[in-house]
Length: 164
Image (cartoon, rainbow, N blue to C red):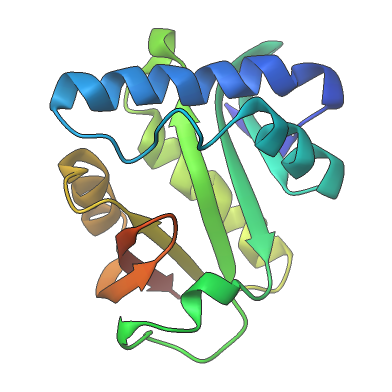
């Protein structure tokens, strides 16, 4: 699996990964994402801005995420404290297709994201997730992210940070 910038013609496949994740969240009994977020236009905007990425195996799109290197205004106000004050990357909207869910891709995905950040001179990564998203909270702990507090991003979210 590789991480690469998404192409405009891949927006619908990338968006389908998010829709698959929404369905999975509903099965688990919570809704971090809803009908109004994230949408196909948000994915298209990510791609146009050069911050939309796909996880791919050959030509198959396995997953999608947004990676922002730089400031995230929603992270300025935190009920808690970030681990570092160094430059950081933010990961938003990370999701895998239904066909690839449960295959352990998250560990490979985070390794690719960490490598990507290192290649871009970034050694801190911030991410947020819904309180009820116990699967993602477990993954973040496993991947070395530390809970830092609460932020508001499309509602209250648990905020995590990883650094080298």
